[in-house]
Image 1 (cartoon, rainbow, N blue to C red):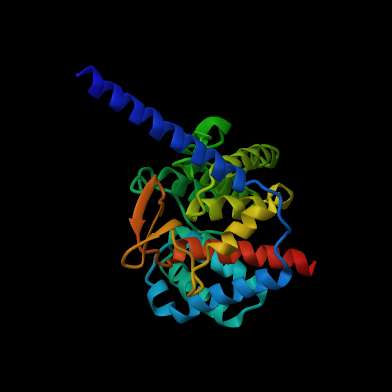
Image 2 (image 1 turned 90 degrees about the vertical axis):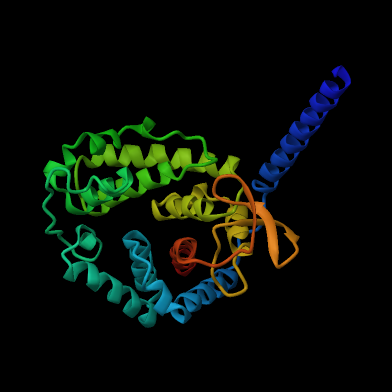
Length: 294
């Protein structure tokens, strides 16, 4: 019995040591100094990803995610891409025509009027976005909205959460729409980007949230916080078809599958490009490409 317990204890210790060494190696690789990707590399990846969206436009138009389509709208404007702009307008027009609470992404002034409890079916961060888009005072007085002006609203630990990037998106929308206390918004934006930078340092999994974090640093004007290796990792994670998958490949396994990092931990799957990480990567690359031009 004691021998069996010793074997179990040694096995657990060995696995813990292996996991720790592997993790710190990945963190090290995620923070090494590398040359900044060239303008040509950025443009090639951007063109390839844009073509993926246009090629799959019938399918992606079925995906009802306003903020993702707003990213595409912004990307199309930055790159002066008519076809991408036409596709984004098609989705945006449907929001405006329905008088959706999300129409504020495509209208200068939102006509949304909040009715108490009418948004309870949405996630907390989604309600925060709608408040930023509409600046509706009744919605702004809700407890769940006020809580998201607290720096400690989210747990900063990076491994499972996109909470901080969502909070930062809401604050950025408030700045763009000139809603609320702009001194508070500026202070929170700066503090939240510091936390996002820490998350990128310590979470080496190049998936959806990794792209989202890098995007929000660049979009908020904090491109100086973005390490070249993070952009390189994102470019390297692009699929052959031009899109990105919400999965970080590590080792190939049979049947064209990979062992790798999923959103929460590890998984074995075949990576498939999807709109959520791809749209974020397109907006990120559009912003970076614009920096080269400037």
